[in-house]
Length: 556
Image (cartoon, rainbow, N blue to C red; front, side, top):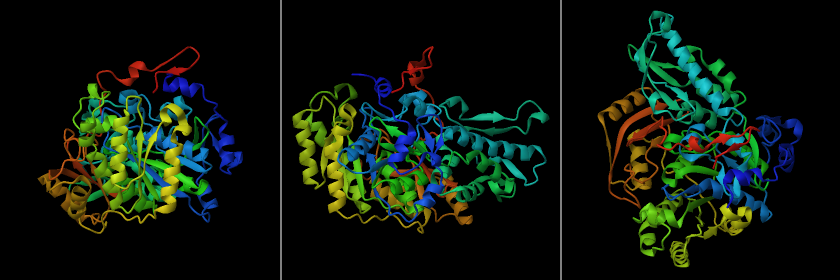
């Protein structure tokens, strides 16, 4: 079989103006980035404000494993399949980050015959959004350090600067650094560190902003530091807002691309990837809902992290109401959850499958707690046996949840038609009664207890002294009524990546709590979560190359 990038290069790619025309958007309304990419102006939201929204379909997945799930691939394939059965669908995806692309992923735009294109552009510099976010983030950092150098009028305590620099590349050497060395002329020495760009609060702000004014308000609310007497210092106090917004004025506009089958796709943003949100921007989702009868979007990693944040943060912030949730799983991954080593996953094992299926069961139950109908998509592998397929189908029948074997990787939209039909039928026959899982007016600890016990299945939640102190400070600032964004391992429902399946009754330890006032949520850190990943022993970068004619290879 051809590689992903070989498939992408053989695609019948259309000029982006042709794709826009399908959506009723004229060429004059596009901001072109070459022939096959364009930005959509925010004015389109105003143009279509009185148009009824389409149906919102959320694609999420079981907890990820080395066996793979294919959430983005199924999202793309479902969008293509919806159009094949005569439904006007628009896909809304997050942008890939170059850190993971060159680190462990090699690409993040679907796979096989269910991809968004142009593949090289999307997985590399795309339209420069990530670079704009990086620049805006580091401009604020430069302003902070310059303020201290120029007399420190605000009396910022260098030991209590909260806002870190960022880079769109995995580099563990930058996690903890010392800056300002080399004498007085080079600034005030202090400890600092870098995050990967998608973990930056600027990314979250870009994704949750409804427009330029909202963007500027959120940028101004970034808590950057504390003074020597404990007074908070916000970005607006440093006169940083206008210049940061100027860098982001184009980046806030959604990007229009297409799939291999020329289905329109809006790719924009990708907030806080390190804490498993992995969904696109509010503006892109809202626009997709206006442009299509169905908007198919995704939220990252397991439903316990990705879907939960989508529902409790993004939907709450933007007033979105999903009509259906698709949970992606593979038989291989469920066997892995049932205790089968990665090397043995190709062998039939219905016993392990039955043991591991509890992970899928928990995610189904969780999504139903939000009042949402669920459809299960099994991303089919050639090694899946009839006995294993029958086991999955019997389980889903018992749980009264529609299930579809999808083959979008191998067959594109054609391999997802059954899934599309079941999603449409579910939306038409089962009414959604969406409601967030907790009331944001609860205390921080109460909100975390709801998430821990209802979504993760923990028996108890404990808070370290650092977390207790941080909660107290947030309460003093009057910011404790914001939603909670839990940073937790994606590999398990618990905070221990080794606990597979559906662990229950464990103790969830909250080691620290941080305020992202600009983004509009509170981050609760559990377990060993890194905001700046390192490269693996064999980085994906080793396989990526470009020939004399500028053709890229090795992306996947």
